Amino acid sequence: MTRDIRWGIAGPGRIAEKLVEDFAVVDGARVTAVGSRSLERARAFADRHGVDRAYGSYSELLADPDVDVVYVATPHPQHASIARAAVLAGKALLVEKAFTATSAGAAAVIELARSRDVFVMEAMWTRFQPAVLRMQELIADGAIGEVRSVQADLGVQRVFDAQDRLFALELGGGALLDLGVYVVSFAQMILGTPGSVTAVGSLFPTGVDAEAALLLGYADGRSAVLTTSLRNALPGQARVFGATGWIDVLPRFHHPRTIVLHRSDSQPETIVRAQLGAGYAHQLIEVNECLRAGRTESAVMPLDDTLAVQQVLQQAADQLGVHHAEAP
Image (cartoon, rainbow, N blue to C red; front, side):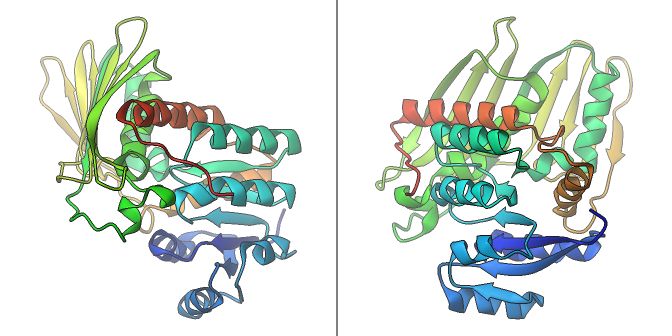
């Protein structure tokens, strides 16, 4: 594929508004179409960002022969149905996190994508941040010895509003799917898939989780302690502990510029790595490179990791009594 890779946007909401700006710093890619359940919203988005075509349905977007890859940025419960339709239409996909509302929904999308050899990736931008990549290099080089545990938190204070998407169960609201996905994915990236998940927290009156603390356990004694909240603000930092040191990922860890390496008997070393654009560009570049190379999965954000994260989120939600469902 030597021409520009042509992108479509499904869901012209807040996150899509931010991500689309980073196409300005991505070579060989352009947004050609946007789709929404509201034609008016799609046209307004297209006008703001110089997009050629606007559609009042996702099916029209997926039928456009001039769209190679679709970025899905709708509410979580809509991801699975849009993703399945896109795969059947032969469109590559970048699906906003959380990938789906349920682990069963994620498994169905992944199984279909693999059976059709269609590229699909979760839009977990954290894994592509230059500072995070440098952290992983240091860990692989043994800078802090064997990694034994991870801590991470991410929370914001939001006034409860039953009409707001964040607090609506049918729209995938709650702390876990919006913010908890970051802390779980970070731990999974470092430690792999846990053997046990223990969650405690509280709910809002609408049935979504207000806050959650997760303990991930591993057979060899490793652990992750993770906190997420819509009830109170949290620093948004992460720490990786090794046998001979640790690495701090400074706030906010899900798109950091700075990490601090602490080696035993050495002064802390501050390492700064700036993002390209607003930080979304790196995952867009990964999708483009994978498509040009004919790959159907990313090695940085593989689908097995996405499924493992969704399974942890599902277990936590079940323990808290939160019952998400995929939209038809």
